[in-house]
Length: 346
Image 1: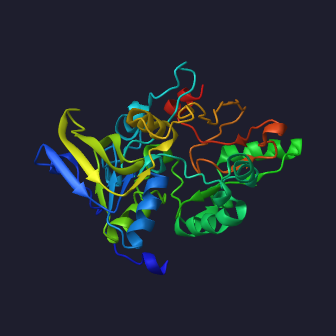
Image 2: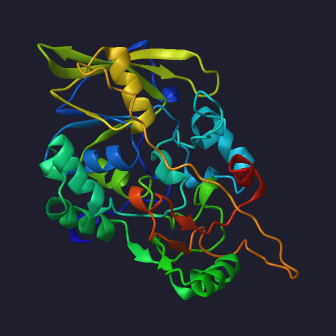
Image 3: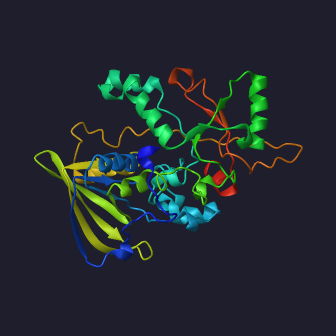
């Protein structure tokens, strides 16, 4: 895109890390502070910086460049994931895999991109008054992000052998085949999406919106966990946090960012926790009590012949005719899995 024609050298994203901090106190002032550098935070940071705002992005996780990504999920869990991949619900029966690094979960997801269904946009508008999130409002926004992230439909050459077999079964059952859409440029089809993309072909925030935001003046701090949202007379006025050495886990400095605009984009788990810790936005008593996710259950089959399902898009096809609650509320999706990831879905 024309407004993204900015040269960013490979491994050249400018990030202030814990190792760069020399004092025990850091006090910054900005027009906007963004908590979290994943899909929500990175896009907000870019749009604000592009509009001329002075933006500071705070990320709790480390800055790991793509040349340091391992092609072993067991290793990636320890460097790129929240709680080393061990984050679960209180019952321990659902693993919640979440990226904890600059770029957030977009660095370690499978690049699968679905739009929010119109059903839910309309439901939110009707039940919660979110008329600024209607299909008419959101469609051009979806289209813009899809262009920026090169979100395209999976091609035949990207379809994995396992997906082809599942597709045959779907045809026999009369299930419509949905073709996955992914934020990928010239996929290398190695199947290592969950360990980070070493070739930068996955268009994560690490190689798209964050470099664009930095090019417009945004400042990124990694290793920085926000502990409190500051408020005055009912309005957010900044945040406090701690800069933690990722190697020793010892606090290196306290940080405060004063800003009239605070964007909380730490995901549906960390954001409510931060609001609760800050004693904010909970007059209804509902913060953190309405979390919803889509648990994944893995179905594995054995075939009389070899199926080398480790080459191709991590997700190639799906069936979504029963996604709405009154129709069952589920989606069928093929997946390339290696043993570590399969163990989380067992």
